Image (cartoon, rainbow, N blue to C red; front, top):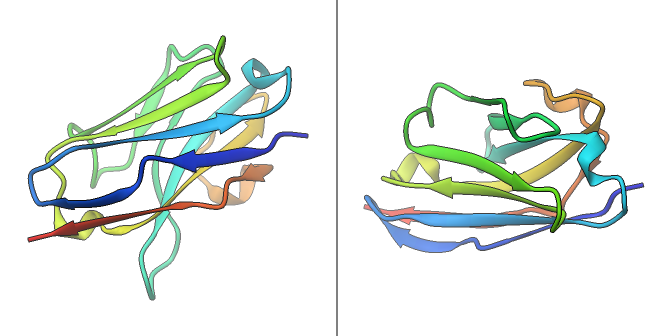
Length: 123
């Protein structure tokens, strides 16, 4: 079993940057593909990006491509989401998720979820 805890959220002005972190428990972190999702009030959960088990492959949603970067440090059981050039429409609760063996675009395929961290971008 994996427990995930996100941190690093906060309030920032448009154009600013934030780095979210996700700390995972357990000794098998490297066996999990990791994903980042977000959910704004009244909207469905949205795919932000994902990273392979070794960190060598990443994919991003169209709305964040070129602005957000996912990385991971398996030695520290950490995954990161670097967010640059933030826009008001990026305001949401951000979640990290773990999927045993692979990574996916679909939220339903992830086995474990963190509690989320709020990101608020003002114009």
